Length: 136
Image (cartoon, rainbow, N blue to C red):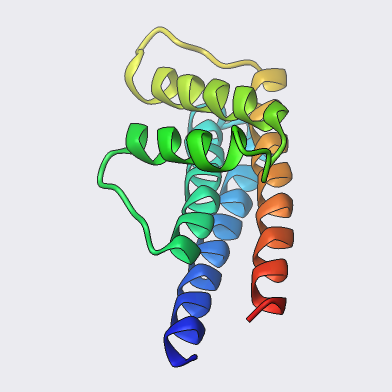
C-alpha cells in the first residue's frame, strides 16, 4: 500500500510538471514566442504521458521509446483515444522543427494546436490517474 501511495505521488508530481509546462507554453504563446511555446507544449505532452508510465512503473531514457510504449500500451489498447496519437506525433515533429530547424517559423495556428493537444492530453491523463487512484 505504501508503495502505491509513493507511485501515485510520483505520478502526481509528473502531472504537476506537465501542467507547469502547459502554463509556460500558454505564457509564451501570448507573448508570440511560438518556438518556445511549441517546445513547452511538447514537454507538457511528454510529461503527461510519463504520468501513465509512472503508474506502470516503467520509464525510458529516449523520447521515442516513451512515445512508442505509450502508443503500444495505451493507444492501441484504446485506454486513450486513437485520435490523440496523431496529435502527439505532430507535436513531436513541430517541437523538433522548432528546436532544431533554424528556418522553421511556426504559425500562430500551429502553435495553438500544440497547446490544445497538451491541454487535451493532460485532461485525459488526469482522468486516468483519478480512476487509478480510486481503484487503490
